[in-house]
Image (cartoon, rainbow, N blue to C red; front, side):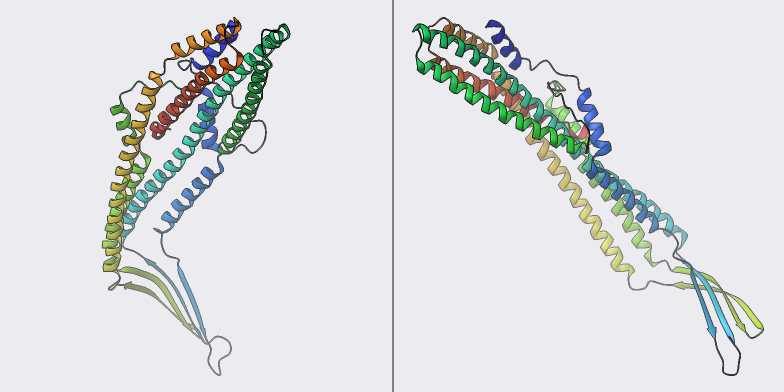
Length: 394
């Protein structure tokens, strides 16, 4: 009996013993490589890059051929062939090229946010599975104790040292534990399936051990954690890149007054005679440039506001998460596991010695197990909170 009690105590007092992080690292890599939504985002990023490059290339070459017919002439009397190419001033291509590079950088940072959010979901789901399996271990050990007590009290009932009420109370405990174990099994299965989907695994075996938390609770100062969170916040990086890109777009728009140039070749034929010439021209945007500059400036102002909003939101998020983290960590420290362990041992000894009925034992032990479950819940929430604070390092 003492071995059973000891195994229970070890099960919920081993928060300082953590599993290797290799499994979680492998799952994060699998998700980054195989998640279908992330693959779609990568394709969208690639397509956007091609579109940006295409917007800074030469216009299509124009080829026109015009045959003319004349009464009394057999076949084509005369014709005209025009081949022309329109292009911008070279400085405009350079400006658009720089703006396009910054636009691609902003899109890549937006993709980084999508990727980070996916990996955070993987991390949190993994931690959820760890918490469920820790709870299951407690339930299994409680079931073993219930089986042992049932055997003990059935013998006492036969000898007249226990009542049917005691035996029935233990049987009801067994019923409740079986129900909780089934629910726990369902919750674990659902979480594993969710993790499988996040990792992009569509077929074949998928096993997740997740028997312990992959990382210990950090001992870093709150200030350093918050500073790293802000420094690595992908939303801020994306907003800052978008602001730089919008600034380059303003520069491009201001060069919109530069005329477009046209160069080409023309050939005219009439009967047996032909003449060749060149085409040189320009189109001057007199009316649209001002509005394009205003539109680009408005987009830049919006980008500046988006950056400020991203910074405020990140500051608020990290402050709230840090407050929760510190509160949970303090709550975990306040839980006196030695007192809980000692009380469980005393209760068990008392019921085994016949000094306590099964009904009284379960009334008291249920209160203690509620504290144990609360401890496990706080522990899991603490790790979830730490994962959120560390999300920008994924």
